[in-house]
Length: 117
Image (cartoon, rainbow, N blue to C red; front, side, top):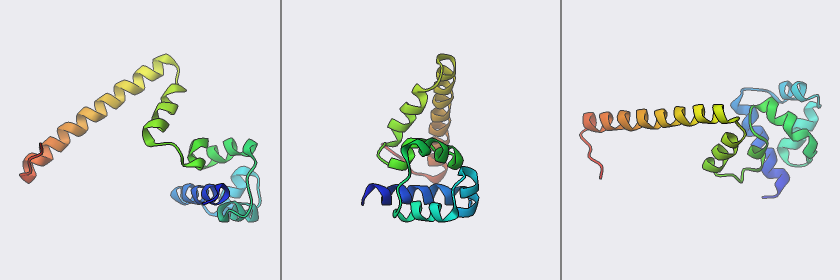
Protein backbone atom coordinates (compact mmCIF):
# COMPACT_ATOMS: atom_id res chain seq x y z
CA UNK A 1 0.00 0.00 0.00
CA UNK A 2 1.40 3.39 -0.92
CA UNK A 3 1.90 6.10 1.69
CA UNK A 4 -1.03 8.27 0.56
CA UNK A 5 -3.45 5.35 0.70
CA UNK A 6 -2.13 4.20 4.09
CA UNK A 7 -2.40 7.71 5.47
CA UNK A 8 -5.88 8.10 4.00
CA UNK A 9 -7.02 4.92 5.67
CA UNK A 10 -5.70 6.14 9.02
CA UNK A 11 -7.35 9.56 8.60
CA UNK A 12 -10.70 7.94 7.88
CA UNK A 13 -10.31 5.53 10.79
CA UNK A 14 -9.55 8.34 13.25
CA UNK A 15 -12.38 10.50 11.90
CA UNK A 16 -14.89 7.68 12.21
CA UNK A 17 -13.63 6.82 15.71
CA UNK A 18 -14.59 10.35 16.74
CA UNK A 19 -17.94 10.11 14.97
CA UNK A 20 -17.12 13.02 12.68
CA UNK A 21 -18.34 13.52 9.14
CA UNK A 22 -15.92 14.63 6.44
CA UNK A 23 -17.65 18.01 6.51
CA UNK A 24 -17.12 18.37 10.27
CA UNK A 25 -13.45 17.47 9.95
CA UNK A 26 -13.03 19.88 7.06
CA UNK A 27 -14.38 22.71 9.24
CA UNK A 28 -11.93 21.80 12.00
CA UNK A 29 -8.89 22.09 9.73
CA UNK A 30 -10.08 24.74 7.25
CA UNK A 31 -10.11 22.43 4.23
CA UNK A 32 -12.91 21.53 1.84
CA UNK A 33 -14.92 18.35 2.21
CA UNK A 34 -13.55 17.35 -1.20
CA UNK A 35 -10.00 17.66 0.16
CA UNK A 36 -10.85 15.38 3.10
CA UNK A 37 -12.42 12.87 0.72
CA UNK A 38 -9.32 12.94 -1.49
CA UNK A 39 -7.02 12.47 1.52
CA UNK A 40 -9.05 9.48 2.69
CA UNK A 41 -9.09 7.90 -0.78
CA UNK A 42 -5.35 8.39 -1.06
CA UNK A 43 -5.69 10.33 -4.29
CA UNK A 44 -4.28 13.52 -2.79
CA UNK A 45 -1.38 13.90 -0.41
CA UNK A 46 -1.43 16.14 2.60
CA UNK A 47 1.34 18.63 3.27
CA UNK A 48 3.66 17.62 6.10
CA UNK A 49 3.18 21.04 7.68
CA UNK A 50 -0.58 20.33 7.92
CA UNK A 51 -0.21 17.05 9.81
CA UNK A 52 -0.02 18.55 13.34
CA UNK A 53 -3.28 20.44 12.82
CA UNK A 54 -4.97 17.35 11.39
CA UNK A 55 -3.64 15.22 14.26
CA UNK A 56 -4.99 17.69 16.80
CA UNK A 57 -8.40 17.76 15.09
CA UNK A 58 -8.53 13.95 15.18
CA UNK A 59 -7.09 13.62 18.69
CA UNK A 60 -4.15 11.46 17.55
CA UNK A 61 -0.39 11.86 17.31
CA UNK A 62 1.27 12.75 14.02
CA UNK A 63 2.96 9.34 14.01
CA UNK A 64 -0.48 7.72 14.01
CA UNK A 65 -0.89 8.58 10.33
CA UNK A 66 2.16 6.55 9.39
CA UNK A 67 1.08 3.49 11.35
CA UNK A 68 4.64 2.31 11.74
CA UNK A 69 5.04 2.56 15.49
CA UNK A 70 4.30 -0.35 17.74
CA UNK A 71 2.15 0.54 20.77
CA UNK A 72 5.10 0.34 23.18
CA UNK A 73 7.12 2.67 20.93
CA UNK A 74 4.22 5.08 20.79
CA UNK A 75 3.86 4.98 24.59
CA UNK A 76 7.57 5.66 25.00
CA UNK A 77 7.39 8.50 22.52
CA UNK A 78 4.49 10.07 24.42
CA UNK A 79 6.15 9.59 27.81
CA UNK A 80 9.37 11.15 26.60
CA UNK A 81 7.51 14.37 25.82
CA UNK A 82 6.43 14.86 29.45
CA UNK A 83 8.30 17.01 31.95
CA UNK A 84 10.03 14.91 34.65
CA UNK A 85 7.37 15.35 37.35
CA UNK A 86 4.54 14.42 34.94
CA UNK A 87 6.59 11.49 33.64
CA UNK A 88 6.88 10.07 37.18
CA UNK A 89 3.15 10.56 37.72
CA UNK A 90 2.32 8.80 34.44
CA UNK A 91 4.63 5.89 35.25
CA UNK A 92 3.09 5.51 38.73
CA UNK A 93 -0.36 5.52 37.18
CA UNK A 94 0.62 2.85 34.65
CA UNK A 95 2.09 0.67 37.40
CA UNK A 96 -1.16 0.93 39.36
CA UNK A 97 -3.18 0.02 36.27
CA UNK A 98 -1.02 -3.05 35.65
CA UNK A 99 -1.37 -4.19 39.27
CA UNK A 100 -5.12 -3.64 39.20
CA UNK A 101 -5.38 -5.58 35.95
CA UNK A 102 -3.34 -8.45 37.35
CA UNK A 103 -5.50 -8.64 40.50
CA UNK A 104 -8.68 -8.41 38.47
CA UNK A 105 -7.54 -11.18 36.10
CA UNK A 106 -6.55 -13.39 39.05
CA UNK A 107 -9.99 -12.93 40.60
CA UNK A 108 -11.67 -13.74 37.28
CA UNK A 109 -9.55 -16.87 36.90
CA UNK A 110 -10.62 -18.07 40.36
CA UNK A 111 -14.28 -17.44 39.55
CA UNK A 112 -14.07 -19.14 36.17
CA UNK A 113 -12.09 -22.09 37.52
CA UNK A 114 -9.27 -21.59 35.05
CA UNK A 115 -5.65 -21.99 35.95
CA UNK A 116 -2.78 -20.40 34.13
CA UNK A 117 0.86 -21.33 34.27
